[in-house]
View 1 (cartoon, helix red, strand yellow):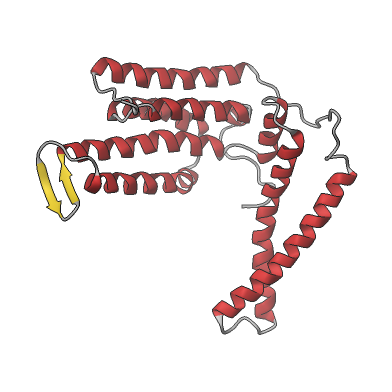
View 2: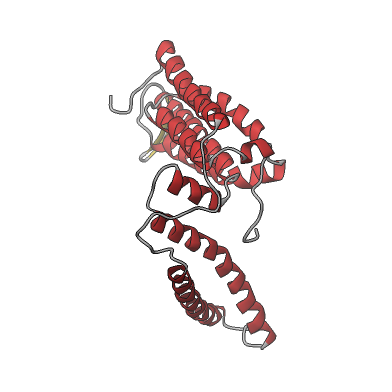
Length: 260
C-alpha cells in the first residue's frame, strides 16, 4: 500500500461523502447490537449484500479486507459455544465447557452479529480516502480542524514509518550488521526509527504551524466537503437495513433486547 494510493471500489461509491459511510455503519451497528437474536443479524447481513456488491471490490480485495472480521466472528462464536449460557439439551460437557441448545443459538447469533457489524464497516471504510474523511469530519461534522488535521498528518506518517523500517533493514544488511542477533538488531532498528520519527514529527509540526494550521480563526479548505443526493440515498438505505432487521426480529418473536 502506497502513501497516496487511490481509493478502491466503484466510481459511484467513491463519490459518496465519507461521513455518510460512517453514519450508515453506525446505524446498522446500533440496530444489530440492541438484540441478542440471530434473526435481526441475518436480515441485516442479507440486505448488506447489496452494499457489498455496490462497492465492487475485487475478490482479492474483499478477502484481504474482510478476513479479520471472519476470523474474529468465528472465534467469538466458538467461545460462546463452549462457555455461553447453558439451556436445553446438553451435547458436550467437559469441566466448565459445555455445548447446549442455548449456547449453540447464542454462538450462531454471535457469529452473525459480528459479520453484520464488521462487514459493512470494513467494506465501506476501505473505499475512504483519508484526506476526504478529514475534510468531512471538519466541514460536515464540525469537529475541530486542528485535531482533525493533526490526526490526518499522523495517519499519513504511519505508512512512512513502514517504509523507513524497510529502508533501515536493507541499509543494515548492506553494511553487514544485520546477519546475527535478531533481538539486538530489532532494538537497534527500533531506536533508529524512533530518532527518525521524532525528527520528522518536529519538522512537520514546525511546517504546519508556519502555514497557519494552528490558527484560531476560520480556515479555508482546498476541497469542499458537501452532502449530496447520493449521500441521502445511502443513509436512507442504511436506516432501511436497521429498521428491517429490528422489525422482522420483533414480528418473528426472536427479539431479545440486551437490557432485558
